[in-house]
Image (cartoon, rainbow, N blue to C red; front, side):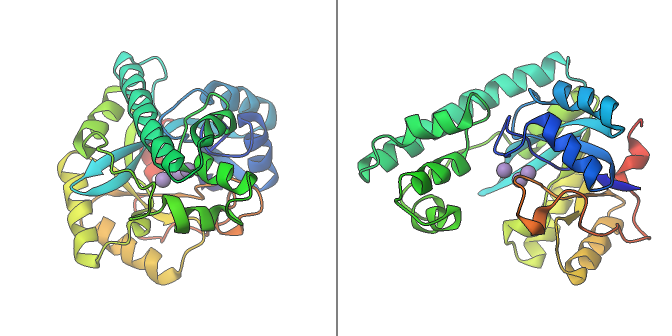
Length: 276
Ligand code: MN
Ligand code: MN
Ligand code: MN
């Protein structure tokens, strides 16, 4: 059985509708798919309905942005109750944060001569969670840069002109929201924060301390060495292990639905905690 517990639809920065996401998951042999859009659950119901039709078990999920010290850290919530008032309030607050941040990014880009950036990014987000990838796509579309990578390198990445330092809610706050909604809190893609091993261990310790449940031991295609090392870190703290592609867009092979290998056998799979 293939479990893919991290994926995006066009309700945040993914390319596919929730329905098409589920169809692709089925084609790729995924039995259990979590839809985890950034700071929104708006696509969950569509994905669940498609899941019934296509024989894919869809786990209602979300990916929250949070703050750990100076680092922005992503926390995935799995198996959340979509009607939880705490969750709905939290999503509302995150929407506000995202709007503030995107306005700040828009201002910076306007000063650099891209006065249409905010408007353009909003159109691309089409009412979904607006994020930096939408600004990047806008810059590509108007021919300011060659591709998304170049947009981050030149304008949106760390230390660049439109890199707005934004204070997300604290990691412990986000874990509390997820638990209040009956969900499981998973530290997303720990290898992507570019931390030293010591800092990475400190992050996992801090996450466990605030009640975090699991860590993505696998995020998309990665080296076996990273997987083994993360498994070791997670096991020594009695945390559960999760895996997912972090799928956004077809054609990005390193984060394709269902293709990332299996959890190491000595780990405790997070799906033991999910009611399937
Ligand atoms: Mn994303
Ligand atoms: Mn993420
Ligand atoms: Mn993601």
